[in-house]
Length: 232
Image (cartoon, rainbow, N blue to C red; front, side, top):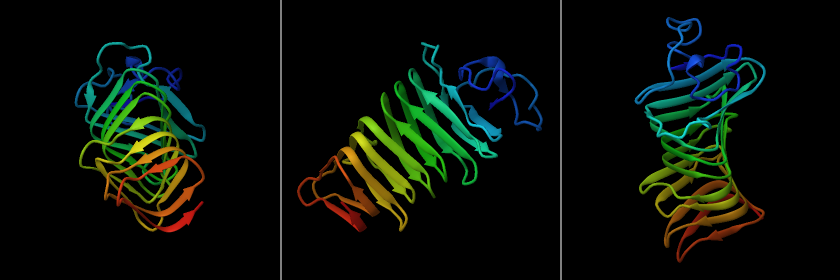
């Protein structure tokens, strides 16, 4: 399903059936009105334009929503395509992509529940987490992709990985890495401005640059933080 950014669809609820199309703009089915995404669908919010638009995710819906196969948010032409999550459950079994290296996407979560298998946040895109509940299997911050956490406790599922060449900003809440591996390439940055970073005993956390201006690093016995540059 493709979201159609026609008149009246710029910022209405995600479940508004009249705003969904069966194909991409200019492609077969691009002008055909579909229904709201169903279980197993690939979901696209894609727009070419200079202004940024944010849709609300299922804010008016109480029943259990389907599990989607993939989710793509992609804004080109200078604009950002955003999705605001404040209640209900957004569940994606496959890949979720914010931007593609040129285009930009954003998810702002202040409530509700999100469940991701693979979450990719690329150049100029970001995830803003301030409330609710979130889980993921793998998180990739690529290029200048940014994850900004200002609340709640985020505990990745056992065996998960958080890889970054972008930036993880912890300004509040807790990032509990006891079940996950955390590492970066030569460009990855960990910003600790508030909240708590937690690890297991003996665990190694790798980041190219760490900027430590506040908060707590709750690193248990023999845990290691390996960095190229540490700024305090």
